[in-house]
Image (cartoon, rainbow, N blue to C red; front, side, top):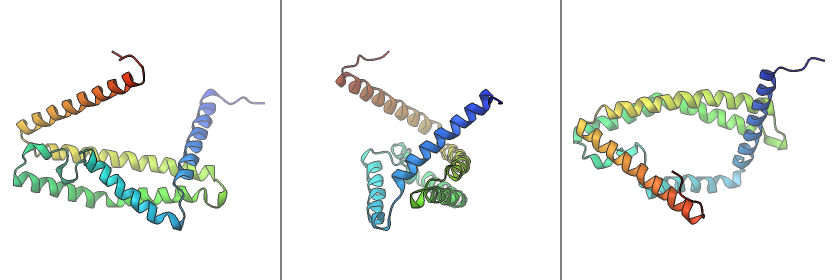
Length: 181
């Protein structure tokens, strides 16, 4: 018999791992009609969580909030966000449809591994494209800022990173692990 080559073996192992991860993800996200109200509450909670942490992303100028933007800059930022939302709405809808198709791959108690793998592959391409578009959005919003505002933004970013590292070190100490450096 022919032995499969290393590449083929690696490809099969990778696809199997993706299929396993997909089945776990689908199993955790499959909902019934009764769960719709609970799902709505979760979405609402996620929004509050973002507010709780004080990081609402680019919506409402979250990243740019402490930079004392002029009214003109705020208007430009809003226009950029609205343009992004309008331009990328079809992409987000495609991604949503692929997620629904992925959920359907395990309906009825059976799991269609080939379909799940196909949908995950399609979703990965869409997610990469959306990530690129979000990066363009961020760059476009940065172009509205003055040099001083950009410096303030970098300083705030460095402070957030320092706080994150400090919390990480504190968690390590509480768990009895020495600080890594």
